[in-house]
Length: 328
Ligand code: NAD
Image 1: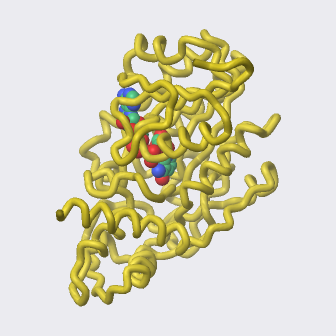
Image 2: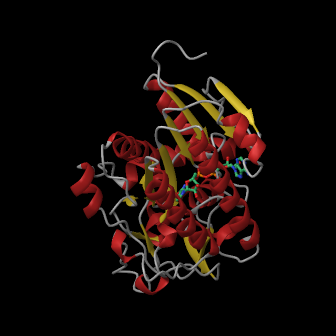
Image 3: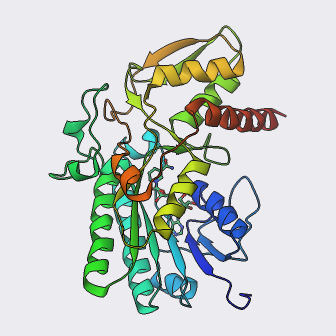
């Protein structure tokens, strides 16, 4: 139960990677927290005070979850995954339909309950493909989102939902915060269920490989990305929530850009293994992507300070342990 003037938060998607870390972070900050998701966190017990197992596509579930005037609502629930889930085209209808329904339902229920502040997790995937063809010079400044041309339906849904949150802000005065997250990684995320992203997939491949053997990497390996460690993502989200006027959309990511082959080499170094990289055809994704942090530096005075390697060491250790436990 909520005690006296304790702040209360709702985390939608609390069984997922970012959501489960966020619940812990909010608990540390003294919040009473309710989580809601289709499932409990897979790799850890939830620290939420209350956890509803439910489908947020159903307006009745949203009504039950948003039954009071939360100080903060975090909307992280989405049908999502890494390139093997988002960029093959096989899951497009579900991604668009499910995630849009969740956002429509949650916003409407939050409006009815006069929710104080709501956070929406958008994505770097909203940026136009034509600005990300050169791996060494991708453009992701917030104002480059339009004219829009994301390279996936996942990106289009995120863009639609950004607009939905902005419209609720404009017409109903709802206090919304919108972040475009760029490749968040760390322990306790999907690593072997087809929804894992590049850092987790590479850590798994390296952990499973015998020294001297080879690992497969999708694409020619020269495609570039940046990756932000989960703790730093939570820090930036907090800054955005505590900011008085600035609502975003704003990039939350790292500017330490690496090629995918460099990411694999860094992982091998951490593992102390010598492996050959075998670049194979994979789902087509933009050639280059990096976070442009000028706006977040200016508005929130925030920049990440974890080098990629530090977060990768933590992530590799955790995935290596999962691989070992699975083999037992
Ligand atoms: P995740 O898949 O681990 O978490 C999403 C959670 O939403 C899952 O636990 C899932 O069960 C839940 N969910 C899906 N459909 C639901 C439904 N109908 N009802 C209730 N719950 C439902 O993903 P994540 O990495 O934690 O990402 C969280 C959010 O951040 C997502 O909206 C994602 O699009 C966004 N995002 C993440 C990244 C990243 O790098 N992880 C990057 C950009 C944006």
